[in-house]
Length: 476
Image 1 (cartoon, rainbow, N blue to C red):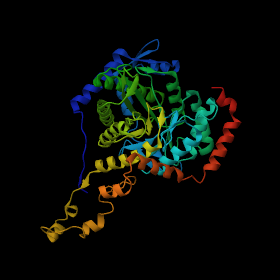
Image 2: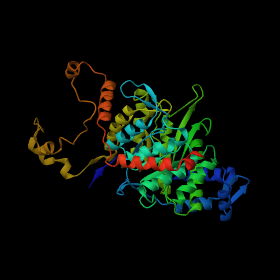
Image 3: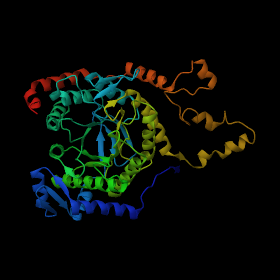
Image 4: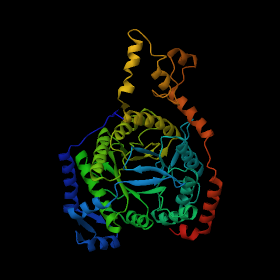
């Protein structure tokens, strides 16, 4: 098949080597702070690092070994054990979620504290919408005691989707008990992983105790994990894109190296969320240069042959509005033109404190169009239909030609949300606002969400497990 397919290319080979050199220089000359004595000891035994108390400086040799050791592809499965996708080996994948504190009601845009019911809604919504490949812990459940929030919230996540899950925990010490509950409900997590935990270092250049502990737990269970960092350019990273890229890449390579020292061959997806910091509003935001940094990171990971987890450019809108759509669209389209990876956090707004089902629904359409664009089109004799052009001739019509009859249902994009109306039709319908159409469509979808057949059984077993282990969970 001869496809005309668009691709984006930001870095040439010389620039890739230059960025790699910058990151290695940071690791060798500045080093990172490692807050775990046991991890420091394992690094010491390699003989390829310099250690001064908690500061660790990495040789280029140990970093290169780690890059070669880590798998280039992570096979993800659904909860039923069926292959879902190969992270690092196919197209860009998208996820719903953000660990929000508030739920933005679709009809009124009012904010409500995030609850179990909201977790059910957003998980089922992301499951029903075909362009989301993972569900990424949409919110932090707040209608249960705080010490049980991670357990109960992730139980609802687990029981309401069969899609792969990106799991985040607000309390790092609950991570191991959470995995114990998943194993109780599902069995061995490492054989056909349907969940991939998400870990962050602390920028600049700190491998904190909680992250290292969770890495050790995940590796012990045979789980792949995402190691991703988050910039506040101008505060936690340099304001220059090159400086932010170099520093964040150094952190990623440090985390990757630690993972391979702990266990060679550990599957890790790495990437960054390159946000900026507004000194006037004291808010984080995504700039067009954030999109460039994300593309650069994707190209660096393709060079290393490592699975990439990048940014979704989320969190900037006041719901699903004009503020939100610009960075979402820009990032989705450009990211889709790279080798691929994962954009796991879609749906949030108001500085990532809230999540809106309207945003989830609207972005499902944006993703569809971005992937359609990235796919390109087939270019060959069959698709050129020269015989039809000759048959129709000058001044003719292709309305009833074979290629039109064959392709008119799928030959162009049709929105499932916004009808393609003429001016007269729009006036006849009362001149509706597009946002109101989205709100009504979203609420209708929420009213008709699919419920997994085993939901009640899984929630019952999960609640029984949590209630029978209260001391183990609550002591943290």
